[in-house]
Image (cartoon, one colour):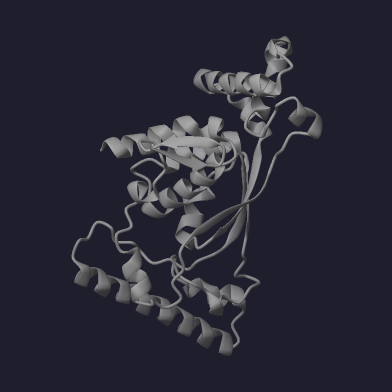
Length: 266
């Protein structure tokens, strides 16, 4: 059985499954409880590097553009057969060899831009530690009223008792409600937005645009898809991986198969 995602065919063994990466057994429960301003994450690619029309006619795609650039290193443009389909496969093979050799500088040729929704301030503090080849445009609560903040609720996947999970979620909910109430009180008393926002809990949601090149994304995935990574950034990284696999499967297929394949075995 095969699943089709973009131009890449996943076998039933290696298809990305977020529930394998971050089991979210209580997602439906959170929705049924109608928690105060609860929000779930969402990832959209809104832009990415594409080769010129001249190169596209030769068979170069976003997925193989790094391999095309790498041919300057080896003066290997003479390897092309002038058959776009064959040359595309040739560049895919070169892409895999570059990754296996650790020659990943050419991957910087590909830049992605995402709109990302439903991430917490806690997650923001973690992934903004990545500095090279990445950037963000974040909603600023210095300038935007935080009274409309939404919240990312914990998933508590390690707890099997539904009654305990309900109680925990209600505690989180009361915390969120109290934060909004206290924020509004501070604003009514004349506090600036930037001073009033400091009482917000780290689970408040903040949306952003995120931009990263393919090399930087591979580094991010290496760290943030690991089992020891916190569940929220692991989930978000898995969602980003699913999106880039639709466009550049050759560049990320090893990470996809290593991550989800091992989970499938377990």
